[in-house]
Image (cartoon, rainbow, N blue to C red):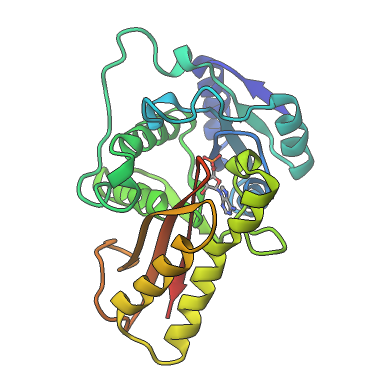
Length: 280
Ligand code: AMP
């Protein structure tokens, strides 16, 4: 497995692959890999001739009061896991390699970035789309895999690719969960044992919402109120948002008739967790 830290090295590898008319799958990550990431990589392995991942804790997607400095990092462990999964190459740049002095260009998807997570993280998606656009330009992947756990991110990236006519196929992977249902996340390590237990209210409220819909409830406001209630009455948990939205536009829906997604963000102690589920 190769590790490239510069754009120049990464582009030389890509040029060689393209000359042989072979294909590349890219799985972008911020590292501290868990099974959620490695399952994306396993999926990616089957989608192209070469599997490239990136590990980059992207500063532009963190707000000034967020956890950039303490975001967990362990490159040794990450590279071991990546090699086991069959990753051929890791792009692992320093911040200055991606954002040299004088850097001034940003990609911004409008509207769908202004709801849900965009409300409490107003600069987040601009950072995500900027770094993903840069990664697509550097690695030139034919296909790229993103997790459904970050549902709004997936939707925003699909929109960017479509609007900017990018030559990459975006493939999604279902949310990978712990045995008890908690969505895997690098941030779960911040949780104390009691917070870890209380965090199950995220999946608990999504499951309850599904049951209600299966039982014939179509009123989105009622389901939303149930979830807000469940979360607010759980110790150490505070609702950031609970929304039931159209899966493509992310606009709120009043009635659940066709496809709808319930998306939520909850502060458990000082850790902000997100999750979502399709309600049919
Ligand atoms: P991150 O390192 O958190 O930026 O995530 C990198 C990629 O892994 C993104 O496409 C995430 O959506 C995806 N991912 C993270 N956690 C999970 C999970 N539990 N299930 C599925 N995909 C995930």
